Length: 146
Ligand SMILES: CC(C)(COP(=O)(O)OP(=O)(O)OC[C@H]1O[C@@H](n2cnc3c(N)ncnc32)[C@H](O)[C@@H]1OP(=O)(O)O)[C@@H](O)C(=O)NCCC(=O)NCCS
Image 1 (cartoon, protein in one colour):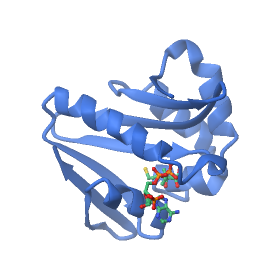
Image 2 (cartoon, helix red, strand yellow; image 1 turned 90 degrees about the horizontal axis):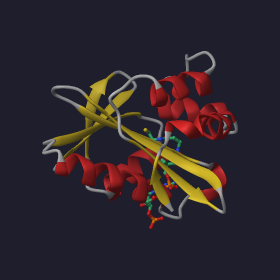
Image 3 (cartoon, protein in one colour; image 1 turned 30 degrees about the vertical axis):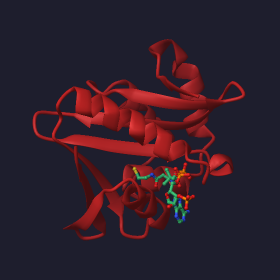
Image 4 (tube, helix red, strand yellow; image 1 turned 180 degrees about the vertical axis):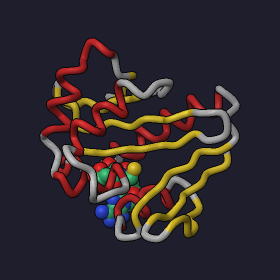
């Protein structure tokens, strides 16, 4: 089940992020150098507004979260799914919800940034139609016109 994240669920979201492997949080944040990556991502998801955020839930537990950071020119997507729940289209469904919101808001293009080493992330975005290009050193840029 995919739902919009509600701020009253801050503790559950924080616990979910704290349960994720540090390496996965680094891939999500596109950096291996972030201290306390779960807390950093929690701050990004809950404080740095405006950003539509969706959570995926199974059996009452959060299993994935995705967000769309919108500013004047860029709408940047980010997604992370629990390692135990991967390859079941949770990430795809979360991103489809964000793309659908963005389309309604007439946002012309989604963008995502990924480390070159992030084969699952690149495969996910390619499967959704994103085009991948070089960006900056170890970082690649994925774009999807809407
Ligand atoms: C990337 C990530 C979000 C994928 O989530 P997911 O729910 O497992 O992805 P989906 O099940 O929706 O995958 C959809 C398609 O993407 C591709 N894909 C996803 N993970 C893949 C993997 N490990 N290897 C190869 N292809 C993969 C496949 O084409 C897959 O379709 P298929 O299973 O029919 O072959 C997850 O691996 C993750 O949380 N990684 C850490 C954080 C991260 O890297 N986020 C992305 C950068 S913001």
